[in-house]
Length: 410
Image (cartoon, rainbow, N blue to C red; front, side, top):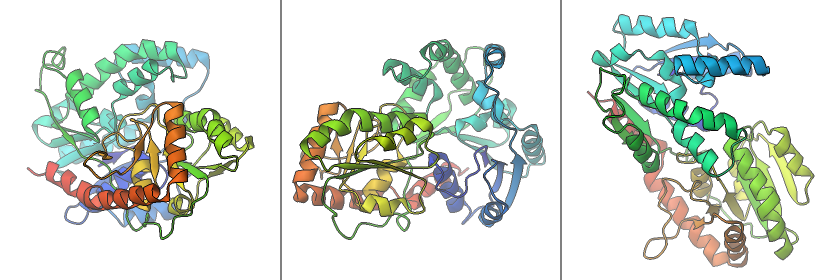
């Protein structure tokens, strides 16, 4: 398994959570060799703890961040045009890790090579597909995410992203062609990849391989880490949880704080919002100066904060893939109001099906959904009970790990 993101502790973000829980499951019956990169905040104790989960652990040094100077940005874009590989992938690349995995494959020490996030594709050589099972667990399409930010006007740098979009499409087609199997987290991502990798497209300039298999394996929840709540706290309390240095979460936090919350507070003046998540950037921290908003940053137990809230709002406007934050809130029994993006990959019911969450995309839809939950304890109880039951039956890490293991069978 290759992961340029150090996957421990599994509370730093979605990539860490998914990677750690999958490797933990696979380690029960397989020898997992993990190659990863140590970020500056990783401690020796955390390396030792991760080492206990795998048969062999190789940790490589972080190569530092990319310089922000305009001349370097121009040079990086030029390299993107020339090499076809995005700057964020090249900036994470470790030649030492490349040599290590090259030697493993050459010595036939592994039956399968998995890339835990698409940025790790850079380490897999095209010719390996002929002699070893190669899998890329993409998490979400880079081309699709860029296209979505442009369509929703949420891009930080629209000109840059418009220039990057065709390059990202070419890049994703090229790297996907190297793999035997591709894993996405939702059927939406799977459909998007099928469209991008359609016959006649994937083969342009790539002579060696046919269309890879694309499977959907959603995320899961640690039900011990996220126990069901014992009481309904009631009141007018909202929560949004997620890594607060991640662009889709930053956008969601600001959308909720600046556009949705003020209208809710007009109806319910005592409404409060708690923003929970690691590494809040300055524009998120600044939201704590607004009436009723508390920014708490990283916490030991996210479930404790979820249990204290009457409603969890997941107002994602960008970012494909299944959302851990939604699964975790549902597991904790906190009623959820979320967007199409926040509920991607989930059957939330309605009509003849059990209702598990309320859907909203426009500001007024959020206001009405939140108000209905504030006013109706029976509705809160219904969503809480149905959501927890759904997570228990469909979205545990044992279920996701079992599907991943099956994908790796020969």
